[in-house]
Length: 329
Image 1 (spheres, rainbow, N blue to C red):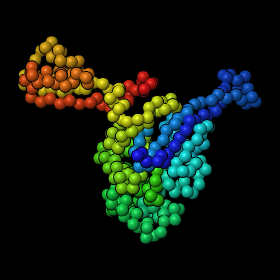
Image 2 (image 1 turned 180 degrees about the horizontal axis):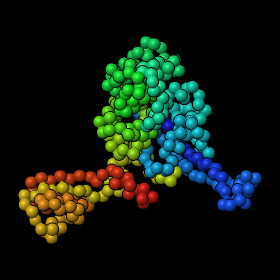
Image 3 (image 1 turned 90 degrees about the vertical axis):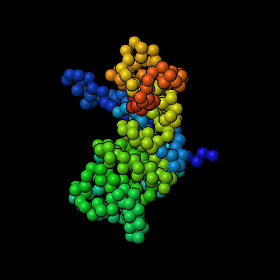
Image 4 (image 1 turned 60 degrees about the vertical axis):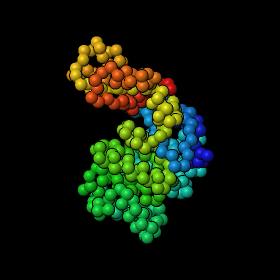
């Protein structure tokens, strides 16, 4: 039986009025005395549910409406229409019971005080959330161990590396043990090792506390490592809600076969086995429809002297890009 939804959005919409001004002096005078407006659609009729403990990727190109949706889910802005409930609460009411249950982390937006040790900022957060000294020490110790930050919290924030600062920001955001995590580009600007460290932490945190996570990221490695389900938003409208694997199957009905041959062969002979994407010496790469993949691999192994062969899926970034270009799922 599927867990009860902790996030429920129904026909969520947000429109912004933008003043329209004609060129020239007459347009300026009319703009001053009789201003007219047009409505800009940021998000329109977005509906979805997320169950307790799910980790869901929220994807879309720049300007698609991801951050606007997150801000409505966290109560930072009011929706123009529709309804949303998070952990049983109406977000924009901003009640204490709601704020105790959620957190919002935005990459490169810091809450830690720059010139003070991170531990001092954490003590301020503990006071805000009425966390006792004993519980504060226990939670900081537990999270610092998970994040490998034990020796860093007494250093001024400005002396931490970017990856260490991001981990400290996560610690600060999770000190009150929220049920729902809204993460907007949490690995933005981090190097590969720091990204992997943040992903490992989020996976462990989700498993340990059954926290619900809604994650936006332009790094597809974040999505593939953490999310089985994705929401795709394009031009303010939700265009897909479902399994990441199913999306890849639908929009990438082919596989890449990488072959290393024992000897060089002419292009004309190799072209028989599929759409040849690369031929460099003894290395060949074919693009093959998935329905004939097994037959093609068997044929290559039977006909050619193969040193090595591997089958790979196309990059996730490429598949998602095709979805947005098509504009429909």
